[in-house]
Image (cartoon, rainbow, N blue to C red; front, side, top):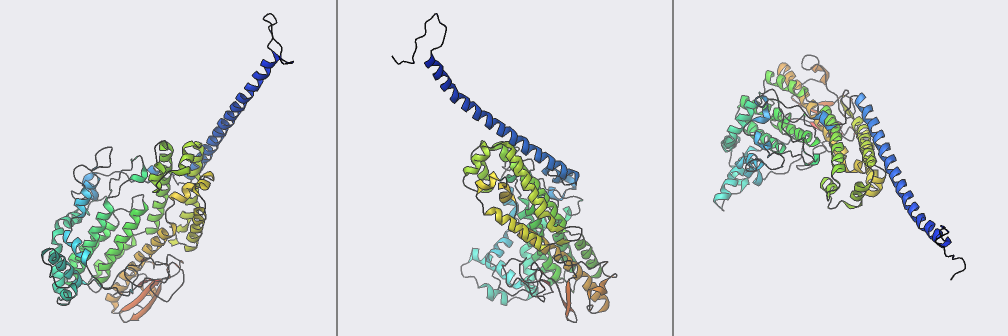
Length: 537
């Protein structure tokens, strides 16, 4: 027996020395574990409190400034169906979902609705247009009606005979009037749908019933956007054909319907809706420009009034603020559902949740609040100030700085960003420069088109173009819109008795003398280089 080991007698009531040492030794590990648990609990409690307090304080500050962060503040209110353009028999089924699911009642209405112009779709699929240099940043050369009608005939012959004549030979044999008449015959399959849209455009409201109540905001479907754009594409071709046949009044109705459709989604709180609206507006500018020399003074005045109501700067800024609300809702959705597999991947498009997903699932809730805070601050402080709605300016320099800040975030790993509470800044912030550049491009398009109306009215009144834009004020326009990029006057010069060049300095903010940045078909129309130029084809 060891010397320090003493047997305890039942009568002594004392614990042996060896047993006391073992007891203390065993409790030391327990106390360490208990202390570690206490530290973790205190850490989570402190981080949860810190994140929640910081987020609530910021949210109250923004609310007091009239800048809500909740998505609900940007959702347009419902309107009566019988007063809603979006609730026509043609369009309403796009949002006829089975309650609680993303499946439609009956067959897929998107396929059914999108196929309302079968012949147009077939012709556009085989259309072979030569690539030409552009002289106008927003529109192409005058619509090649002969090539279009040849494409209609080629598409029909392709399905019936292998030995169809080449499109070039068909087009060369057609006069503009023959081609225009043939196009109108082919497009007659769309007449009932377009007539329904024309009648519905007289309704006072337009509100597509997007499923804003979706649990995952990133899963909200937008099936109407492609359909509306297709309507504008068909109307564009029909209006050009009608102009070629001097059916000016009917072409004007088509143009006004295109302008209406291009504004149909302006209240929707998504950037993609605004970008599609601008694309539809550019489609409308094609027959708008081709009709100069045919539009009457009252028609030009009405078009000018319509163009003056377009405010892409305000629409895009509001949508960016709404996207901020979408981002917060997505972050909250992930907070609630990180116990489900690959939720982060479903939002980001990545294949796996990875370590960031595991950290989100295990990290303090307060970190999610800090993610929302930094994400909202980035949008509020670095993106939205680039748009000056009151002054109608979009500053490329501010946009470049924001892009560099976002690029700096992209240089870090997802884990590092999440530990710094900036992971969702890199994940959810939209393409800043492209979005704001297109907004500036769209607003400049509306402005130069408005001035073009005033110039044409001046020509009709005086028999020639003015020497300067100042001559238009106040008889033909109350105020000349300025260049969105630099806030200065748009550049204007005469190019003949009845021709002119009107342009913005473009995204590079450099006067390139009216040189169009886009050189050929298929390039990004909102080019980063060169000027944004308007001159008639």
